[in-house]
Image (cartoon, rainbow, N blue to C red):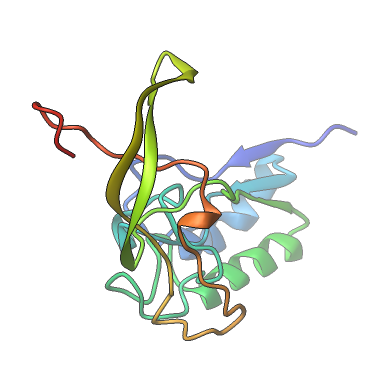
Length: 170
C-alpha cells in the first residue's frame, strides 16, 4: 500500500504549529494521511519570526532562552515531542525537516579575509583578499554547552553573505 504525506506548514503560518498538529492529527489520519512532514524545529536567527531555515542553533528546539525567546515560531521542545508522539499514536510517520548547511545570527564578529565571487560564475573571483567583519562566531550563550560545547567560527564556513555598498565599501 502506498502512503500519503501531508506538508503540515506553510511560509506564512502564524505559529504554535506543534499544538495545532496535536489537535488535528486524528482528523488528518482519518482523511487517509499516513505521514506528516514538519518544518525545521530549531531556534532561528529571527527567533519566533523565523521559519526554521534561518538556522541559529540546531540543538535548541525551543528549550533555551536565545535570540529573544524560549519557544521557536512553532512552539517549545516539549510541544514538538508531544506532536511527534501524537503522530505515532494515530499511526502516522513523521518526517522532520532539518537544514544542516545554513547558519545565521552569529553571536560575535570576527575579522576575516575573503574574496568576492561573480554571482553568475562562482568559479570566478572578482576581488581578492578583502578584509571584512562578519558574525561568524556562534557560542550559544543561552544553551551554555548543553548537548554540545562546539563553538562555530569563520573556519567552519566556506562562504558568507555580505553587501558591497556603492563606492566599494562593505
